[in-house]
Length: 301
Figure 1 (cartoon, rainbow, N blue to C red):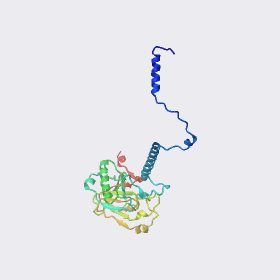
Figure 2: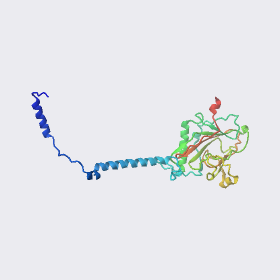
Figure 3: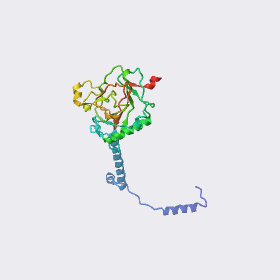
């Protein structure tokens, strides 16, 4: 090291800095007893409490979100009537529900009814809805009106709407067979939470329009797991449920999709039109669309 003229001055500055630094006595190594018995400081306690809080919040939020999932066999306490939407009250007791109400003519007059081609000559046919017949904006208005009517009977909360289908009966001159429809139910599920909505168009009060036979309390009868048609029921079993012919004085019908029903013959000279869709209460599985669904757009191509 080369010693210069400024070296003594630099050494003096280093001595002054070292002299001013506080010196601490040498710390002894912890003993084996101190290691085996650690002390719990307030900071460590706060950290542990914070971790416990985050863990409990995660478990609670996961349990709360799982309330809107389908029940499984290994969770028997999650029964169907416990379905609910978060932060909302819901009435799920729709077993055997049936009621009639009226939807405003200002809404139904905006619907453009499909024209059934003459080659379809059955009792009734199901036609797929499109933007020409009922637009999405109009269906939002209809859904809001239906939810308002359901709210009047105490059914609120999470509702999902299926795609729309038109139930069309050809005029009398185009019918190959003049008879009633098949006795059936709309969904084969055993659990509740499925509603069928039918909006009737035309002059429902005139004779020959064709009403509906609906067997009350027939949702309690089991027809198998995947069957829509109660073939294993005898007629007297259905009669014990109390069949009732619906008096079509109002244009909106809502009923439990598990109720067994049957459409009666249509004998007017004009086509009968009705718009139908499903409502699922809670996080139910949406019913599958009809198999024999007619797509008029594909027929015109």
